[in-house]
Length: 315
Image (cartoon, rainbow, N blue to C red):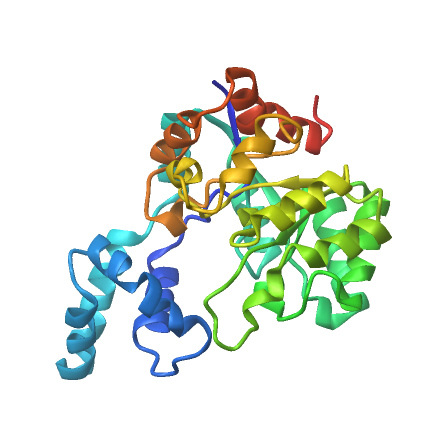
């Protein structure tokens, strides 16, 4: 079965991974991203063959130069080259994937250029910068060839229906590209928990009926609310990025309504996005778990491939 992945993890260099390790494990601030250490730290530490306590003890007890060597060694285990990413995509049957470096469109473009069409860019632009953000998004789409814009309440600290996003939505309609919007709870303690709530997409979809909207991360724990928004608006799509597929079919997980409607009335508007790096799983495993969900075979093909073609008007 062919696959299109709308959230392929950017292949991080060793330097990038070092920066992330320090932000998560070496930060005493209990708000912001550092709170993710408490939630996901044990899993991340285990992937390094350590415990959170062992890492923290290293921070407290090691001389600085020795600690730097440890971090560098750990980062070497976690980093991934572009070639390794393509190999993983091949194993998973992924035809092409959407990618962004989170803060640098030119960095994304460099990787896309060398991927022989296997990777497509999604633009980032800070809505707080006004017209500058609109110009940057337009440059990424028209000059760099990106396929969409990523609007992130998580990153920018404003809701999807905040007026500061509206000039970017307007430009997306003019350029005829989709907008992917972070739509789920978060663990940052410097943001309200509901900043990515699906309800805020309703106003956006009302104000921009011609804007193709992808609700990223499936709206959990407000899944029924997102299903309601998608039933109201034909221009709203859903992905379940960064949530392990096998749990979507687990009774009591909160995903029951997505499986029900995604297999029937909304089967044409669920698109696959792995977020495999967030899960600590291989792309191959995430695709396999998605393909094993209790869905009709024709629906699986839509979720994994055909709906993305429709979203991007590619077939």
